Image (cartoon, rainbow, N blue to C red):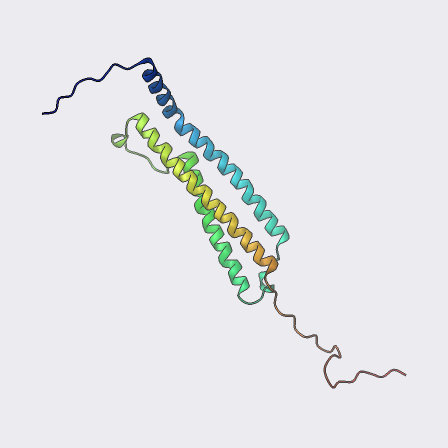
Length: 172
């Protein structure tokens, strides 16, 4: 049979460590939410600047691109929008919590519940940052394709006199 006995009494250092840990747990969710707000604002500004730059400096009409290149720009932009929306939702989740109501009967004790929420918010923050950076990369790629992809071949000018066997007027 196993007998359990009390361990040694807690020292002053043990008590201080327990108080520090409890204090860190109490402020953990607030720190993660503040970080998520800062990341959301910073990445949002980056995307606004990038989209503005792309709209101002990129080609205004993708129909001037060679066949297939316009479709590539469309796919890149669709993927960028998808990643950007998913990233924005993840950052909002990290900053403001889930869009759900938890029944009171299933709520864990306060320190445990807040720690779980802080872990979930930190996970959502990491996912959101990665998705917004992916969105940024895809937008840069789309703008790069509009800048550097080959255009439609120019048609030969009509009536330029450059046709073989056609003589121009003679001047005397």
